[in-house]
Length: 341
Image (cartoon, rainbow, N blue to C red; front, side):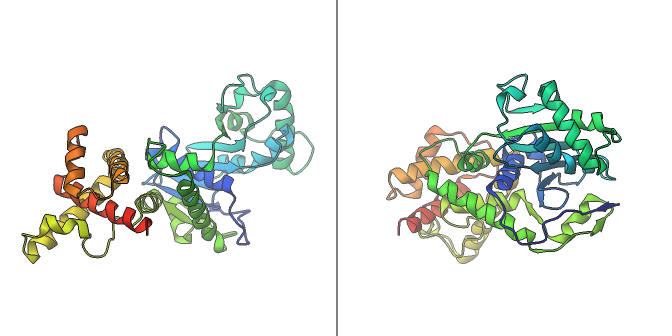
């Protein structure tokens, strides 16, 4: 049985730092593709979970202006509590600002384990962590203490807020989207994260990680990605009402039923390409190329844009048919036209 403790009771504004920790899980790890859901202020500040709830990435974030060894030790306490809890976590992560470099053996690293911290600082960390766990200054070593420390990953934040969004969106061109748009998206995600803390779950109990969803303190990767693409192209690409004006010439010779069938097929294909782990990257890359092409000349027809894409890009994802790409171009063109008004 797992009991939620030390959750934020007040609707306290979520810090940029906690949002960076969440976006780090979703887009900056080699195993980010395995994380499908993020809980907020349940197990810890943020916790990533796999689709089957069998793997949990636990993150404690601490944005202190300075982090002496005693503060580091204190910050590790909730991760230790989870380490000895009834739930097995896949990884234990302390997300922090850059540490003083002379604390580290290899000062070049920004992601490292406990063995990279110098012995002098380790003494201060362990002293404070023992006090926090034991509730006294006895210095007694708690159960599995050394084993826990060997499992912790330290992740230093050394990036701007916009960089976390850029990494998640997988757009490569720096000129395709302005910095201000990325920053606005970051703030929107941060505010959505804050809203998840409105409920009161202190002392609630669960027996399996999957039960956490009943508290509605989670956000899915799909929800974050959908928000991202809708903000970057200017419209909600997956629930556009009606038919984009620039798509009309492509369907003018079809009857009503054929148009309905084509629109349904295009929408389904876009969703499959976007939410499919294997095709998602190509979807982002194609979106970026369409945005770049249209921004150079918004008067181009969707057929002009498709011809340019076909001349330079080989599409491998089967869902991205020529009709689907034309529809996608028309949606993005509509979004960019709206943004200019």
